[in-house]
Image 1: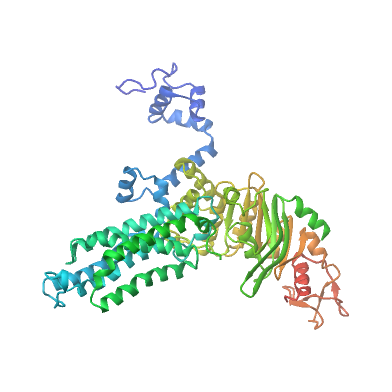
Image 2: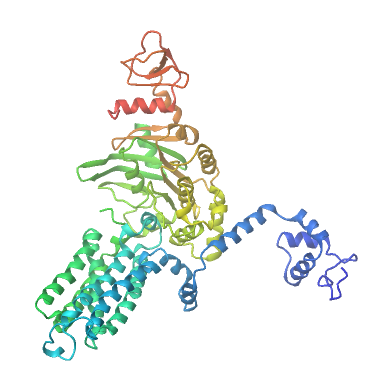
Length: 303
Length: 292
């Protein structure tokens, strides 16, 4: 070597300025340690002769295996910015990988939810600014546009969250559901991870839209409990009946009273007073059923 | 049948009296089965109950009656069921994929479900199974861009993750070309750890080529359990070839040489008896069971 910089292999170089063959052999088999490894590697970058010598000692199978592992590690999804951000927040990477299989956490799904919310909330906003004529004010809500304008939002918003949670556990949305059932990873844990994540992801745009719609200021908070109760009920019912029927029942449990109250011009009663108490009771009862019957989620949906 | 019963009682994977109905349809009717380490082929027509049986052994389905024991573990017990699943590799008959995943991403997902949470170990396992099925070059390919054969190989790869002690493969060679089927046979023969492997197939030549043991399932019941040679021998004296088709034969078809191959009770005049194959034995059993 004729470089003007100090020879990085100086401490291990033989009389000819190259590492000894036994050192190259130990490097090739991974037995060399510490400074010796660095020195050899620095020397190899500029010495074709030693690279050729090294090839004699290299374990081809190990090299091929390492190459495969390297390629796979490149291919294993590091994820986009959101995934890296969530990793930095302490969420384990393998959990994020499980969530990547949840359709209601994909960008396309969330954009669809945002789109629907934009339509229903946009309609209410349009009434607020007089772009669309409003219904007559009533009772405690004078000063706001008629509560009838909130009907589409009140009906749709919790159902959007329910749809997201349903997509997280219904087998029809998981093409590899049988593999998940046959795997040792707890089916109940997997369901909770996905359902809670889908719930949170859908709640954010819903509550944001609730802040925008021209309703009472307490509307976003008032929507929270019924939405949670609806999703918990769907999960609980899925332990007792066919999962799609459970989700449909939960949807009907919200839509029918909502439509009836809308017909009676009192749509906001569905998120007030007694309704909140009923939702709290339903949430507690559903959570208990899910906990007691959690083994149902370990066996798939074959019965 | 007594020898079969005796083998069931000491087998690594045992099924005793399994029955399963779907509404009015009886999928399994009192199946007794014993599987040892090595490869067992499960042969039967569509609707014979193969998929139901395999799904029960894979703990993704429950029998109406009967017991299953996998390495001494009972899948009805929640903790033991998880333990079975830790030792299990399963390829369902109709496996769907998350099409937005890459090949390596999907295998990484399944590896996590198999509790391979360490990232480095997961990468090593994924690399190993990719190499085993010849999909290393496709690690970064989206699943939606794969051909049917590649997806089938991917399905086999995910079943191999974690070096399972019990490998259940439902129609693993469907969609594979002859070269890939040959490679699949070699792959199964070289699996480390001598696992219990059971695979279902319609292809009698797959059975003959790779399965030391074969079980024939017809109309939800086990009609034969033994070696491929014994299955072929069951048709001894019942197989012949002739220049013409004979109406008294149970099954007839024209071979590539232009002669008719017959399976039946008695050869017609001028027919030449031939050595039976595994397929002949299977067809004869099917006819006896009334499925042909």
